[in-house]
Amino acid sequence: MNRRLSLFASLAIFLGVVFSPTLTHAKDIVVGTSVALTGKHARTGQEQLQGFQMWVEEVNARGGLLGQIVKLVYYDDESKPETGTKLYEKLITDDKVDLLIGLYSSSATSAASIVAEKHSFPMVSSGASASEIWERGFKNTFGLYTPAELYMDQILEFGKSKGLKKIALIYENTEFPRGVASGVKTKAKQLGMRIVFEEEYGKASTDFSSMIIKIKAKKPDMVIGGSYLPDSTTFMRQAKENRLYSKIFAFAVGPGLPDFGQDLGLDAEAVMGNTQWEPTLKLPGASEFSAKYKTKYGLEPGYHAGGGYGAGYVLEAAVKKAGTTDRDKVRAALFALDTVNAFGRFKVDASGKQIGKPGYTVQWLGGERHIVLPVEAATAKVAYPFKDWGKR
Image 1 (cartoon, rainbow, N blue to C red):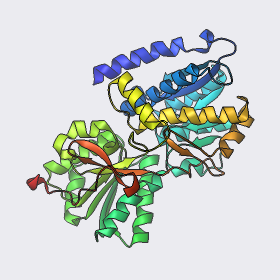
Image 2 (image 1 turned 120 degrees about the horizontal axis):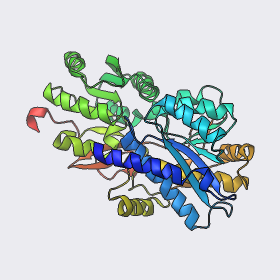
Image 3 (image 1 turned 45 degrees about the vertical axis):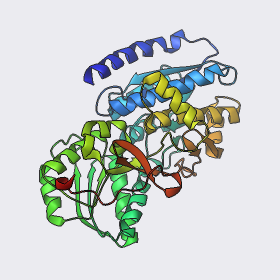
Image 4 (image 1 turned 135 degrees about the vertical axis):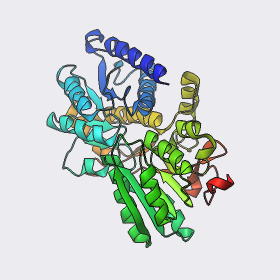
């Protein structure tokens, strides 16, 4: 895996040169972004970039945007917010891109959005959901994802329907996981459920054993994590080692990726999580995108790929509505848009926060990831309760 990502990063550097503005024609429309090709978010960043690239291929195959060829300029932000900030400054001031798509993770987007705001440059955020990004009075960051605070609502409501009351809540100490945790606490209070354990952990954490021992003592009905792929996977491995049991295990991000099931095998069975999008959703162009992606890259797209692809289509719709790439007119068009593409509905409030798109709950069943909530979008029924480790 590391070798594959290393090769991909090397290719990305080469492509970054190929797509540099010095090689574009005078009438090209240049779209700038940074992606996590190395570091913690390399797996999701790679899918996001592939989604961007598929949109670029498709828009150009249709004759371009406003009759002009679209070129993508991108750099590796190494999964670091501080690097992403420098790259967006470069994209705007040195590369002089015409349009911006945001980067992956709420922390990185929060940092890069300061640059976009400084230059009054509208940016479609393709991989962030922490609400605090949209609570600063900015007017140039447009969210694509369902807000983090709503991620666990469906799972909590399901738990309530089963009579569950006690929740153990863990989360990484960065913007998105804190947003998930904030939403869990608010929703739990509304439902009359109790947080019996709460702990925040560092973003480089790999040892959860002491935390798990403390959680066991509280005997929670549900264990909920505001997490990413590496930490949620590691936590479940150590939960098994320490025989932590709960009727529901649910994590943000991790279970929504194919890697979660591949890495954990049978230990992923019945773990719940969140997704912004799945290929099975009845959305215009979703099945076609999924089929093309699978043919091109050899695997089904996860929601990060779908988000990259959908962000391109949102940007395209805004430019078409504006009839120009003029920043003020594109910004106004993004605020006014209410549109549906293969990723779902795009509609924002006066701050640019996404309010039109629902989220979905997934669960690993029989080695496959299924939507289980809401019922109208489900491809399988919820498996409940989580089987004790000794009976699996």
